[in-house]
Amino acid sequence: MKNLSIALNAVLIVAVGILYVLHFSNSTGDSKNVKSVAGEGAVVYLNTDSLLINYNFSRDLNEKFLKKQEDSRTDFNFKAQKLEKEATEFQRKVQNGGFLSRERAEEAQRVLIGKQQNLQQLDRELSNKLVGEQQANSRRLLDSVSNYLKIYNASHNYSVILSTTKGGNVLFSKDGLDITQDIIDGLNSRYTAEAK
Image (cartoon, rainbow, N blue to C red; front, side, top):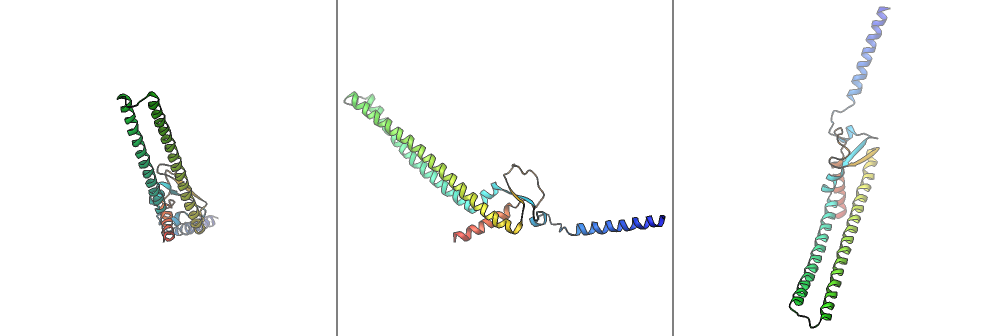
């Protein structure tokens, strides 16, 4: 009986040893490779801050937007300075008695007030136009990334691809779950090909 117990324990120890070796020999040990850590059905993430900074389409959209914003601001500032000069000239005429009658001064004042209201309306219109364009750019960028993620995930089969920012929801993860660089490389190569 004692020999049987020793034999069974020896067999169990050998079996556990074999299972241990089989289990750990399947891992590659390369934790830097996304596919080794994040296999099919895994939850991975990408850093949107890095994506926006390094995705060429995002940079191009941002540069075009900043150029339009600068042009808009320059045009508005030119018109505001012109109105300011007219207002200064009006004040000078009033102080020096440069109007023939009070009615002429009041008419000039009404014209200036109308120009000021038009300038304020222009400011609102330009701001609304820029906000609309920024929203349209955000939609285009989101569509581009979302469409690429569908294509990318067809070959990777992740369950969930999260979006995070520096200091965002993902505070710690295993190496290999951040697919940001892989996505940026794929998006940029696709964008370069489309641009040509």
